[in-house]
Length: 131
Length: 314
Image (cartoon, rainbow over all chains, first blue to last red; front, side, top):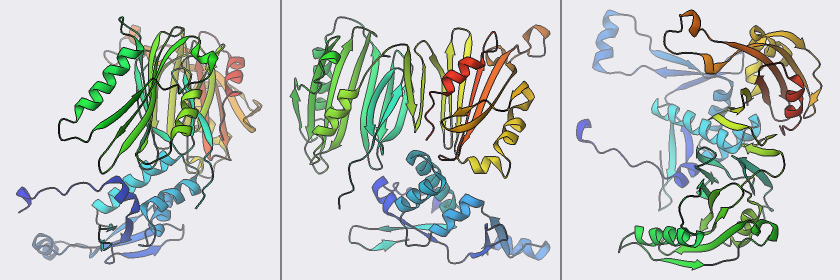
């Protein structure tokens, strides 16, 4: 039950930097003429939306266009690069201070995670990976 | 893998200045000239803590350190791992620095699964009247004496000469020592520092990701679009600043101190305008835009030239 569910503890900073962002496989990903990433997010099939879709037109996909920096970051979220590597790459590419790059990248990754567009693969103590 | 020695750079804040490894950046900052706190972090943990406050009372440096270490050892309770403390360390060796200060050096180390240690010192400066507490932090097994000693030996707590260094997040500027920081804002990609000097006001703005702001415009076009409304006379070729061509102008700017939040529609509560001198440049090497604005009782572009010349932008 959501009401009494205990909130998971936040990921320790060291683990967060070693985590690898992985894209949601259910999304479609295209590139537009400006080089920006266009994400197609499939509609959730809940009873409420299914009912609404009988009465109104509800598109089967929602489209999200990432801006230039967002697209650059999205390409780095391939499951191979760690968060730390993503931060370093953003810092070098856009000539930012470490803190500037770190704060903005972590905020953006958090937003993408909350929207379910990416997940973070974290190695546990036994070396296994969770997504 | 030998990653090589890190580059050391200057940090300057409220007339406190010191050298630090380049990969340590400001993690927390608060307070003003008389009382404040500054912390530097690397990618893993806090690395340097600096506290300062006006010297009050009759407590000596020795007593203040003793109180701090007593609190540190007593804070954890009975179950906490023990803290080993060493006192009276001669961490600062520069005789000129020691001349006007009473310095107390110390080292502490915690035991346990994730041991920590710190080299620190506290002094009371007779010139600026402040008590300064500084400590360099590290992991238990880390060899950090050399690094701590170097940092603490470069730590200075008041301006030498007529100018003071202000240096944060890769931005460095030399300002007259009587300039007081009135407001600061550290946002991702945007740093703003506002100083007050008598009735004059100096604003420094640095914007990262310049290419995104310019959006295919040239820098002079962007500058005119952004600041054109308050500039009457343009100086297209204001010389080179940090090796970059700069643009400037003079005009009338709204004095923010005269902007009233309530009943601003009354004629006598309308914002007052003051002579404004402005200067901006685009640092291509650092992909950043710099803007200096100076509000005073008269136009003083020569003062702005002088200040702009001290900015280290890349």
